[in-house]
Length: 417
Image (cartoon, rainbow, N blue to C red; front, side, top):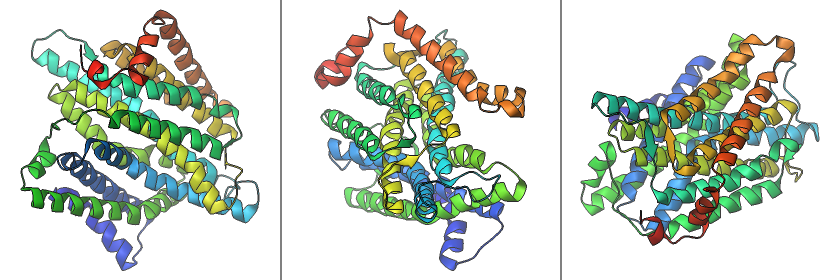
């Protein structure tokens, strides 16, 4: 906990003292602050489950899970709105070789969603498989409890809707209403689950050993401090990433799409990895599945709202050709991943497919000529969709049961095996 706080101090000194450094150093300082604050948020949110109702805990945890990504994305969506307000209906890039503010607003969102599945879900399986081998067990499959049908059913609903987004020219306020409504329905559904004693580990368990007054004081202090750090760091982190790309000739789009999400997703991935290392695979994978639902609904749905506020327009967040391809690839990956887990299990082979297809975009992109860049996204997206369709045909009789469990079954029924 002390180390997490220490990583936030350089950014706070820079931000509150009004100092500036070279863009790469600022990106490191403010990115480190986001990581440290995200760890503090994660630990405080886990410990808070001891003191607040199940419904409120779910709502708070859901928001906290996406807060680091949300803060960075809000900065870019706000800049995109300001750019549109200044230049009219188009979202004009600041230079001929630079990404437009509108494309950067979507870059962090698509990157974080694909990292969560391609790296996070597969990592949990690989870590558990390694632990089983060390213990002489021949297991090669993780099974989720039946109660996780709720997350998968709502993920399916959001994914089906998101497959239409690449066909649009904007992500509109109507899309925001639909996606945020899906998130609200998901929150209402899981809020009705009976309260359970949380399984705390590490710093969260340390906080849980405090007296009630000390624990609540510590949790509130950590939440306020971490949220303040993220809000103070997000804009400077975003600007430093863009400046670093311009300074070194690195694609600012790639930095925003992959480096920023890697910083904000680090705590979540580490916690899931620790669960897998202890072979608590249901908690490890279940945490990341829930995070995917939050990001694919609440995070995506809030972008056009922020854009509309800052641009003073209701036409929606513009999507260029590249971003339509990115959205298609992200939605296709979500469809394939959801279909893999439709039977509430994932094997090492399926995890390997998720991992390899995540990296296939970069491998194919390195092979095709520069004139054909963008083809790799289409190729990999089609591969995801074909594989998802194959699983759909194979498991078509299981899907009605999954949808029934996710939307209609009582929580008591879901907890029966």
